[in-house]
Amino acid sequence: MLVRRLVQLYVGLWLYGLSGALQVSAGLGLDPWDVLHQGVSHHIGLRIGTVVIVVGALVLLLWIPLRQRPGLGTVSNVVLVGVSMNVGLDILPAHAPLGWRIAELVGGVVLCGVASGMYIGAEFGPGPRDGLMTGLARRTGRSIRLVRTSLEVTVLAAGWLLGGQVGVGTVAFALAIGPLAQVFLPLFAIERPATTRRPRRRGPARWRSGRRPSRTPGGRRRTPAGDRPTTPA
Image (cartoon, rainbow, N blue to C red):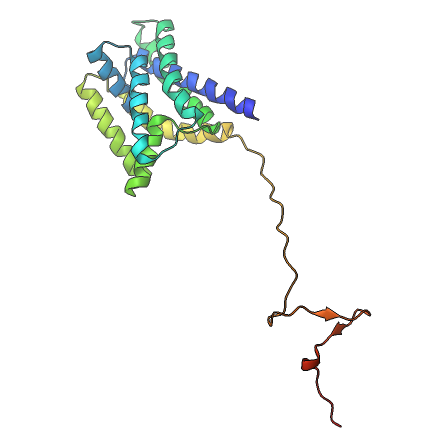
């Protein structure tokens, strides 16, 4: 069980990075966080996958005041997704025709849904950005939908101002990722064996008065002398 969960976690994270690389290579618009990553990469001279790692580490620091606890999947997400994205961009062709780029976009969005189902289904902890969302929702008392929308609109606007690419791919991702996650999450959910709890032993039954019932050697209940009914003389 543990081996399967670990394999699913790391394959899912690697595919998640490849899905981002496909969307970047398509050049038709990115998801909100990658718009920010791309915008930052234009200004500091680092590759977008490296920026993904740096931003993920900074977001993870924001978990401290929110009292969020990272898991193995959280820390692995910070490193592996960015590495996979850089490797994918090294492999994918540059300046491809439009038909190929559309295929990259569609494949990237679908692969992101598959990868999300895999690494979330492994249950080793959320990614740093998802954990920030749930932590803020818990601390502020706001709904997860409101917090997620606010975060993604903020990073999308910041990334666009920094030169990140917003386009039809951004809209396609926003519309498709929810239904895709609903399809693939149940497929990759791993059911853990239920833990059986031993029943607690109860003490002997007592009368409401606090006295234990007593029985005669013949098995009949013996009534205390003070409680026996008196017969007329």
